[in-house]
Length: 293
Image (cartoon, rainbow, N blue to C red; front, side, top):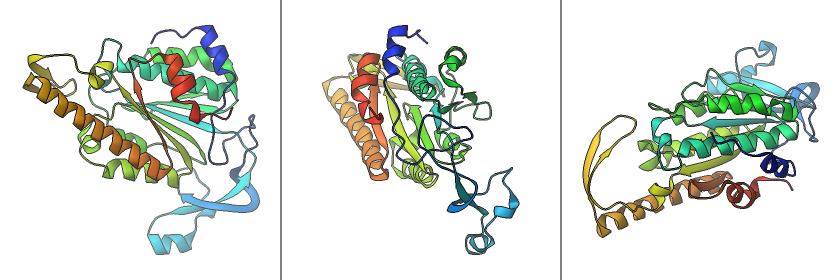
C-alpha cells in the first residue's frame, strides 16, 4: 500500500461518516448515539449470538420462526465501522493494482472513523476469523496501516460467506471493498440482494465500493490474446477487436448498473472506484455523499 501523506490525513480530519442509523458500541464516542444495552427502554430484536444473555431470548419469536432472537434495550454507546476487504487474486490486477486502491480507501475511511472516536473493525475476506480492531482515535493509525500492508491478495474469497459471517452487534456502518468479479454477482442480483437485505436488517448503513482497474473499464488491448483467470488459472483464447470490446463494455455497464440498482433499492451507497482516478478525487468528491460535513 502506498503511504498516504500527512496532508491527506489532515484533510480527512474535517469529515465524519454519516451513520444513517443511531450508532452503537461499548464506549462513548463523539456522536449522540444510542445502543441496545441494559436499560429498561425496549428497542428491538436481533438474532441470538454466542455470548448473549439467554434471559433475553424471545421464546414467542422462537415458536413462530424456529430461530433464536434476543430483546435489545437502549444505552449510550459509540459507533462501529466494519470494513471488509476482498483479498482474492483478482484484486491484484492492473498497472495500479486494485488491491492498492482498496487498501488506500480502507485506510482513509478507517481514519475518518478513528478521528471521530468510532470503533473500527477491518476484515480480510479470506480470514474473517482474524479481524483487526482499532479504537482510541488517531493513535491507532500506524498499527492499522501496518495491518493493511501485510495483506496478501491470492486465491479466492467468498464475498457472500464473508458478509454472512460478519459478527455485527448493534447499528453501524459496513463498507464492502471488492471488484465483485464472482459469478453470482456478475450473472445476477439475488446474492447481492440477499446480502444487502441482511445488512439492512442488522441496522447497518451499507457502503458498496466497486473497485475496478482502469484497464477493466477502458480496454486498450487488441489482437488475439490468452486470458488467464487469476483465481482458478483457467484460460480463454479471445480475439479483441472493435466488436468484442463493445460487447465487453456493454456487459460491464449492465453489471455495474445492476449493482447500483440493487444498492439504491436497499438504501445503500454505491460507487465505482477506478484505479485510474486520483485518491483525492475519490475521497473528497466522488464519495462526498458518505459524510456528515
